[in-house]
Amino acid sequence: MSGRRTLLRQAGVGLVEVMIALLLSLLTVGVIIQVLLGNHKTYLTGEAIARVQEDSRFAVNLLQQELRMVGYQGCLSKQGVNITNTLNGGTALPYNFTVYLRGYDNVTATLPTALSALFTAAEPKPKAGTDVLLVQGPTGAGVPVTRNNSAAQLFVQQLSSKANYCGTGKQGYSDLCEGDIVMVSDCQKARIFQITQTQVVGGGSEVNIGHSNDNKYTPGNAVSSWGGASSPVEERFGAGSVLSRMETRIYYVARPSANAPYALYRKSGLAAGMLLVDGVTDVQLTFGEDQNRDRAADRYVSAASNPNWDNVLGIGVQLLMRSGQGNVVSDPQAISFAGATFQAVDSHWYWVAETTVALRNRLP
Image (cartoon, rainbow, N blue to C red; front, top):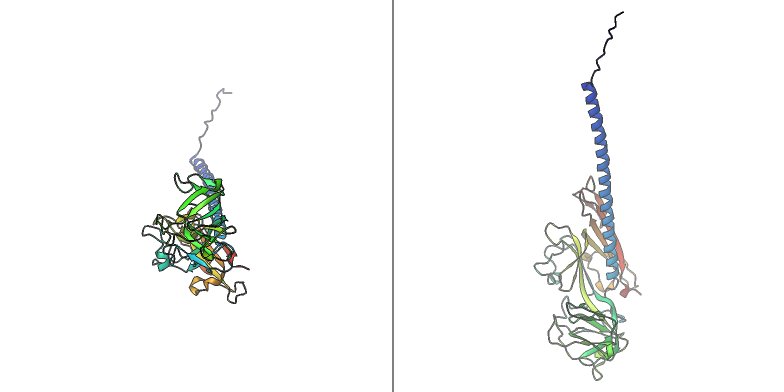
């Protein structure tokens, strides 16, 4: 027998096997990428929804808190009765405090005269096609008057003292500052004026509130001397009266620059508007009007229907919210908003928040 043995040469991996392996690898990588992209999309959607819902809750809560006190005048039973306004320009906004509440329906680039006068040329203006709400009322709970006023001053309780509250180096007493517009009221009458001096007196228990007509602040007082024992009863305010800081506030949709997203703004008097909540792209309002004086709203209508503003008992608010993050939805949304269908044109996520606020000062 021959001692030779036959050696078998090992064959390498064929081209077909390599291609199959590469294909399987690509499929595996593709599946992993799809899972990662899906998870990322889900995360973005969840984050956008959570942020929009959080912003909408904040906006609704803020509006509920601020709108409830519209037209509050202490214990005066009827708005506008026995109110004396001693401010310069007290017959026009923002210093005429007998307006209380106004709505402006689907404003245009040319604002109504009453609104236009409150905005400077450089300020962001309300977005065309949205509603604007103007309300008037107190800020805070008010400060008790401690004793009878004199011709030049009132005396209120010293509730707090805050350094730099009224500006750098300017102390705030009972959350009041020089330049504040305030209303002092009891159950029969009220008087509106501007604070020109605050000084702690009475061993630290009282704050002296001055109201001169030196025109140190805008708009200034047209009348300087009122009150005191020998003055008419409508000028006298003592214990049982309350001093409240007053504001004319406007709520509207605007944006800080041409390419920025829209937001909800609040403007107090002639001060620059303040951005409150991002992502509010539209506001639509309805007003609950009492038509038969039974102290209940008989209908909710837009401002375009010219309701009797003195008989409005509630405000319906709808906010159209838009996510700050794009590429959240695959197809633009179509959602119900303000009695119509809103058709989005982008991949942002939209949400409608709504509330109805009762005006406490007008309810039985």
